[in-house]
Length: 169
Image 1 (cartoon, rainbow, N blue to C red):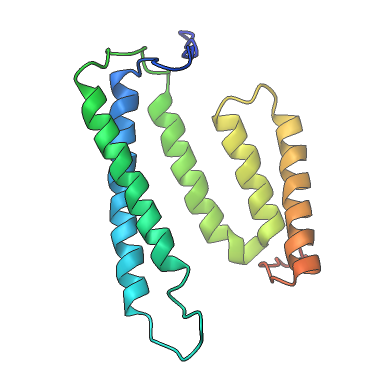
Image 2 (image 1 turned 30 degrees about the vertical axis):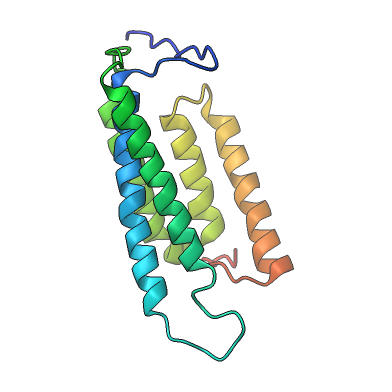
């Protein structure tokens, strides 16, 4: 297995590799698409007699999302010509991405069945392991702890109901 060396950041004026610049451009494009969808949906919301209508939050969020997406696209376009090739891809990177997608799909499917705590703990642990966590046991314990604390805060303190599995959590 070849070792992938982390990219060293040199601060202001550092040069991003070509893959990073292209990824920024893709992300900026996705942000623009999302911005258009958010703004169109916000404009279609019904008018109310309230001082602050239902579009008060989504409309500025959509505009900001579009501005940041456009900024990323412009930045990527200006840096693409001078960007070096970059480091070699990590070993089994494609398999890790597929594993992450499968994990997210499993999370979405299992959430209503096993509840928030179990599905979120599994999501956290599997994602950490796929991203290179050195040991699985602490990640599983951290996943359970994080999911339980979030569940208690949102479900019990704030009153925002999260899906409970057959065990009630």
